[in-house]
Image (spheres, rainbow, N blue to C red):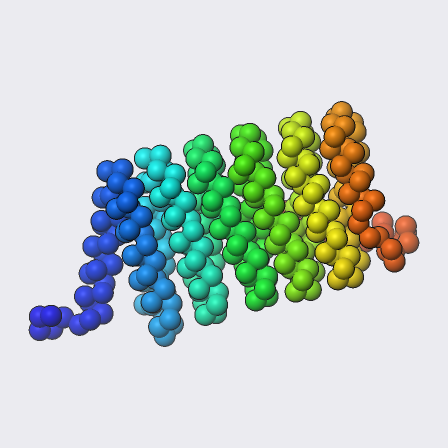
Length: 307
């Protein structure tokens, strides 16, 4: 090392070189080189997250996160699904590490880019990458539930909802159902931690996805939503979350009626069976139920505005 050059400066130069290399490899369609570059950038970010948090440190980490996202966008243009998938997973890993270290702003930044990439991949028709990135959102959301970081859980749910809606419109069954499944699993993880707000968000969002699937006359998506609601209802019932159970029952009944009107007989039967399977014993009486449903609908409007 030459005189007057600190190790910090050397690290900065190494980061810049790696970013440049990542773009170069992505633009040339070099899958192996692109993956190696973003993995190296992940290493830099994880090292910085463990250091003392200050303005410069946070800017450096965010610059790395943004660069990984931008390299992923170039990879999408070059139709390198695998590089896109790896980039989404790496950003999810960074978000999880940042959350574990209580670096919330960093976690939000990384998660936001994961979400935006998932939407971009879906929009560009890269279903494998979209499905993989939705999985990263699901893994993050469940992990955030376990450490009770509600803002991050909600953000994960919002992005999964958007990916699901876009996938339903485009007919990307694997990406759409993956997002629906992960959304339900986040709700279950939240119920296990007694985080009723996030559990309720998941239920409300699933109902809207079910309604959207009915409008698109897509029975397979509707059935995926019904299954997710049924699984969530079972867990919610176990934990005695009566308000959320009311919402889930309402959601299933709403979907049942809509599928009946639309002539989706299989989904209608599935919704009826799911309603019968969840334990509604001890639920509030009808008048109280209607009041709770009104409150939940108002809450749903608030949640949907966040999307």
